[in-house]
Amino acid sequence: MRRKEKRLLQFAGLLIAALLFLPNVGLWSLYRDRVFDNSPDTVEGPGGIPQIQAVNRAGKDAHVIRDGVQRIDWHNYEAIKIDLSRSGNGEQGRAFPLTDADRVDQAYRENGFNIYVSDRISLNRSVPDIRNPNCIKKLYADTLPNTSIIIPFHNEGWSSLLRTVHSVLNRSPPQLIAEIILVDDFSDKEHLKEALEKYMVRLPKVRILRTKKREGLIRTRLLGAEAAKGEVITFLDSHCEANVNWLPPLLDRIADNRKTIVCPMIDVIDHDNFGYETQAGDAMRGAFDWEMYYKRIPIPNELQKNDPSEPFESPVMAGGLFAVDRKWFWELGGYDTGLEIWGGEQYEISFKVWMCGGRMEDIPCSRVGHIYRKYVPYKVPGGVSLARNLKRVAEVWMDEYAEYIYQRRPEYRHLSAGDMSAQKELRIRLNCMNFKWFMDKVAWDLPKHYPPVEPPAGAWGEVRNVGSDMCLESKHVVSGSPIRLESCVKGRGDVSWSHGQVFTFGWREDIRVGDPIHTKKVCFDAVSHNSPVTLYDCHGMKGNQLWRYRKDKSLYHTVSNSCIDCSPNERRIFMNTCDPSAPTQQWVFEKTNSTVLEQFNRGGN
Image 1 (tube, one colour):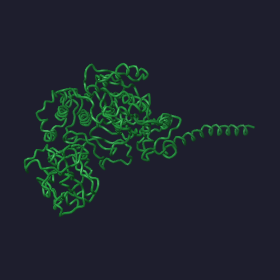
Image 2 (cartoon, rainbow, N blue to C red):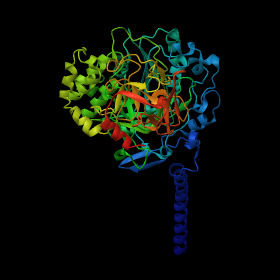
Image 3 (spheres, rainbow, N blue to C red):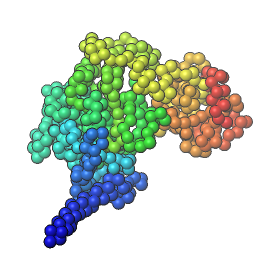
């Protein structure tokens, strides 16, 4: 009898164990399929990039322990499901179909983008999930710092400002948003006064601060940062749209190292039709040239990772969108309060974090769309100069490298940059590295693209046609302008660099407007045989902008296998089948460097 009872007890124990074990196996299988297997829970998105297929729960029950940190899936699958079901104007980030009435100048005048289109798109519109597919699987720490989102604005459009706020609230875990602080920099538009206050009452996490006079972007951001209560400060512009699961990847890196400043990938929202897409080249490092223009350069092979969705180091931020530990931001001195209105602040904060013990990363799994304005729609207060800000940054942080700026911008040398003693004392107090260290250890790949000492040009000056004795000319130095044939303005050796008949065939093997020291950022560009020659933004990637100046005096275009030709009567410049005997295809530069030209030509035909 006792033996029989013992067997019954053993059987009951096994049955209980099985009942406890099998559901867990099922849960693990469900979790494994969702997180580690791409195929069941993804659908094809724009460009063939998988999107997360919505499921009916948030996924936060899925977790693993790695490096002693419990990690979870922060995706809000219910919100994703709702977004995927949306249709209408601009939904899924699609371009709005424009009519002629939509393109009138008045639509752009107050905002620098088409407010007519913005007003016809939902404040809660969906955007395409264009992250790398590996981002879908990523887990982040289950305990992350919360953040204050700071959004400065001045006379922003109603719909673009509200869409920014709604996108943040719609696509962020609510427990990670401590507050959203809208900082009004003395706007005078009626819709940004009482109407905005009334609207934001329905959004309890949003509060509005207002300046008492026009302060500019930099000081307006500082006002928001001073009022922030969150553990992390996240700065956004007032015409952005947060993408799927954008916030946890940023906060996770700060949780891992509080001295890391992190930047999302910035996507482009078209200022005409509000279509949403990646920037050209997508993941690239932030950099600058020696006139202090912001640039993007390819990630070098040495920094390429097996997983392109992993964070990567960036020497310089674009400026408007980043997250930083609040205490670390103030340890670094915040922004330099001597910087006026806007400009240069991205260099100041970037140099400072790298040189003073921190680091900066771009986070591919965090994406935010941004409207790049057609033009700045408001006037900067009189007496304020971007040049002053850039000189101030150069003098405080760039040491002997500031000389390379002054060589290209001689007008900066004698410009007053104000009292810089507090900033220089901060640099000493923080025991910051010198700028040579920054160039050697952080921005070591920058000189390959933008050398401090410009390599010698192959040819420069006026470009005279042998057959017509007329010169190449760019009447309007803007992208899209045609190159024309016109009467030569001056005799050789006496042509001002600022004139539209001076060009440089430089070390990048492209042809730019201006002399070697003062080249503009537009290049000769041709699409194909018989196409016109036009100016286009220089990209430094050769292709349509790669030229050869050959011994027969022809300007040869490698991509189209054709040469620059001209029609003197029509004053047209165009590509044509190369004919060494044709005087209309023979061009004489005012000055040449035969050694450099031979080096160029050894690389081509």
